[in-house]
Image 1 (tube, rainbow, N blue to C red):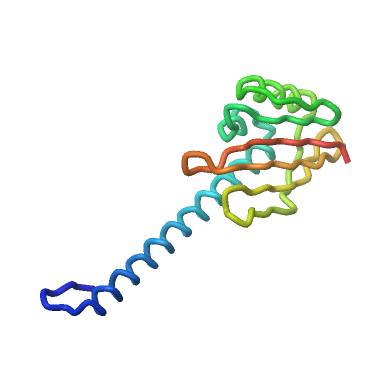
Image 2 (cartoon, rainbow, N blue to C red; image 1 turned 180 degrees about the vertical axis):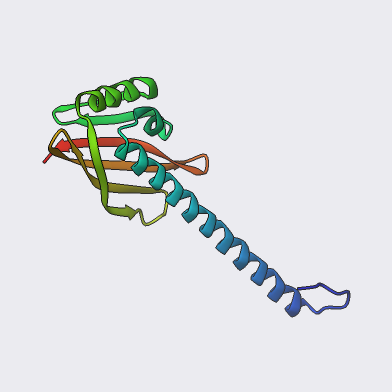
Amino acid sequence: MQIHYGMNLDQLIKIYKTMKNLLFILFIGSSIAMTDANLSNISKALRNGNAEELARYFDESVEIAIMDEEDQYDKAEAKNIVKAFFAKHKVSSYIQVHQGVSKGQDSQYTIGNLKANGDTFRVYVYMKVSNGKYIIQELRIDKE
């Protein structure tokens, strides 16, 4: 689209609306790509039993619930709690079985099955948008 001197107001409004729609589509597309990348990396960290990699996506304060132990931890403590779980339970696989996004697109969750030491655990990850990227607010691991 090219704007020429002498264009009427209707033409300028049409160009403006088209540009606005294109920017919206680009924003949504990049937001979805960011989310997919985060989910992919989080799933990979769970599949590998890698607490260091998983902690990269933790908020400064994270609710961690592993079986009957549940509390709010700072990022470093949360990483150590998850690291201890992975040290005790050698992960053999992780499969994401469900994911969802909030109506306002400002939070999402994923649920998966983690197999470790012959046991199956249900993993629930809740993420919220902060500074333009998804970060983990809550991680729950329950034995099936």
